[in-house]
Length: 307
Length: 236
Image 1 (cartoon, rainbow over the protein chains, first blue to last red):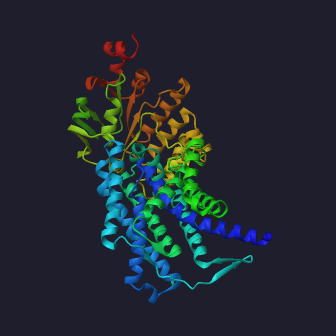
Image 2: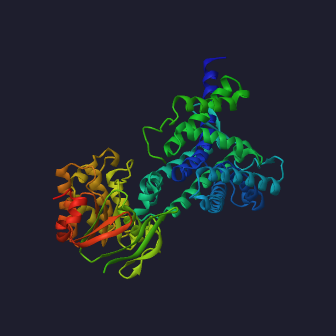
Image 3: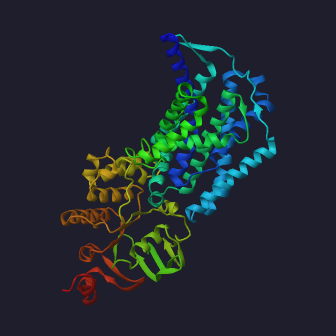
């Protein structure tokens, strides 16, 4: 093999890893934001991601969106609808499964989260059945894009761009807006936040909208990128994203972004150069390694802020 | 009366820590609440702010029941607090902390005006406004906690142990600033262990002991009261 083809293989894997990593990062943000304000791992988050994938498929086929608007605009409208709906489900989840247990020991909320996860997974199976579904593959024209002589599928570029745009938007929202600052304050000290006049319940509601909305978008992305979805897909993606959140430092928003992208790249390169069969093992090896070497995560210490 | 506390009981779990206290604060006053550790001073302030709930009794602010409001609405009703231990948001900048104090205020001009006033009261905060609050010294964090509480334009400012852990010179400066704040028209409720300094500053005082008010009166009278002298001012 010549040098050029080695390079080409490397860059193909790199961009693929970044696209998958962007998806991990979007899911990881939901874990990390909820952990920030409630110090709770929302184990049902992976299933909200699955719901995003299924809702995307249902909306695509039932509204026949592709026939009317098609292409980029169609995908954009679809993404907005999926995000809104999954966000609302997230708010309902918090109201029913977590808020009643706000004053209870932490373990009760964790058990409730596991219960919610089982509930969602079985609900999806009952509604859709236990089979694999296939996304329509004609959403966008299948034209590879040439970048520096490298031909990259259009969908991969869109996935990567969309996740980066969402992450930048979230970062600006959290850093620059009044409600974003309130989210950060509530993550540091809820009591002090209430003394500022911040309605902490409202802040938690916003977090439970944004996190699941991003997770739902990630579900839709997996659907359009890989073409195949299944009611248990949230389990493995949830675990991977959770790993990404830990890798970046749980509770830390930029950490989840970095952790997700990094994990995607490590996994893709590992699959290419070590063995594709070891893809998942490599991801969890990273989790074990980070827990041993740096339990606070990559950005966990430098930015001690818990969101 | 601006603020009236009537027969206030507060429980933490099954343990009652306030056994029915009565307390009044008039407009423009500085009222101090004295007492040993665990007497219920901070609990009283937290009850006013709505962070702990009254199990019995009422808290009236301008005649309206305050104890039924959630904490964030108490701030909107214009009572704010600089809590025990300062509780500044350590990983936010000084300016972000200050701005959060004005969370309930929507008028941008008013926010800018109050912020300017606070930076005049505490020039150190102005110098360090882009620094993370956690990197400030104890005294500066106390200034930040007070400044932040003032941003909501309160009628009543609740101060919980502003002198705790500060050097004597700094305590003097903080107390002087409290006087200035009061002179600008803000009513102050001051919880303190530093009884002498607090009574010199305050108009009136209350003495709390294990959840009951055992003494109250004009600050000057309390300063010379033998009981207070013995218990809180280290003898004569």
